[in-house]
Length: 575
Image: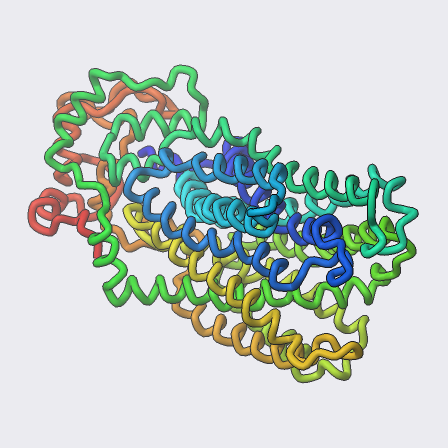
């Protein structure tokens, strides 16, 4: 069977290619999201060089620019998730990357005028970019899950998500390189308020280069995304094109050479399959499916686990400035030293906690399981935030640094990775992408709330001596969120070593047609033209009918009742 061929395929270069092509989007996403943190410092120098602001962007403008992408991502995740179920994964894949590439370039070229401020222009482009960033979540996760083998599926999906860590690292490295290139223009300037003339011109070039570079990796992945075949599961479950699904499976594993569709055989199969063909998913069908209690509980578990995670994950970034100070990266002798130390400090923090956490998940998730990693991560993070919240005044800067690095490690060797993996596995093919999009969208809502509400909260009653008087209270709230994340994680099923169809609770008779190329000849009894790799041959006419009705000879259960289910139960009406 073609699905069996995908599920049981050994780990190979086609899996590496899949992870790289889908992961490039997350590399670009993370780069763009992280680069803006460094770019706003430079934007403040260029556009707020006056007596009031003295080269520092106002807090409201800073927050609005950073939140814009997350706000756009909510819409992108839900809309692209739904469209990928209705129109197909292939039709939507690449569209979101084109949005990211074009808006990244547009940001690097924008400016302000007498009627339009730089903040307004950047917010507009970052909201649109966020739609593309959001669309990448359900598409990349679901496509990877539907192409990956059962044994290695969790690790491959985690590797796609781990590209975020490399994107964050690349943003900091690029900032460090650009600062070094313009060293001569910056080293004689004592601070941001003193940057004028050639210094301002250099900084204006710097932020544009940093932002623009984020779109470069996307160009290399765009061709492969636009030419990737439709996933066999979607082609079979929704399009019901058995012959094409079989050929696409072989192309995915062995390449295009010799794997072409025979139009005559395809037409014969389509004619005989017409009576079993299902309509494409509709919004009403999706709503009805997720309205069922057991399906709603799963969706609730995946969505709110992600929501509680992102509240704290994005909230923890508030303390990064204190940690850079702890490591000595706040010592400045010039504007050059200031910018260089900021970029270097971020590199150290990313390499110490985030990247090791990402890749620990990649190598262990298929052995330990999704739920143990997710619940264990939430539990450890609950303890870390309790220490930060209830013992804040007694902690030294070294303590804060250690706790921050541990938190970053267990975010990524924990719920930050597993909340991305699980929604791509536990829902049926016809509604899988929508389920992932809703889960991710609620997560990004948590990110927006963290940046809009909790960032100002920590500064309530701030003084010169104590700029963050409420930070301990916010950490206590985050500890509560991590505990709630533990509870919602209990609602999510374990996906380790299980086929997608088993996790989704889909009936085996849906898959009796598993489009194996050597299935049956015209008499429906004996295989013909088969090879060890299963590259030749196709369904015979009678074989198609017998298999569709549950009488063909193949693996699977319940084949005796397949036709009855089609006529009586209308199994495509999920839930």
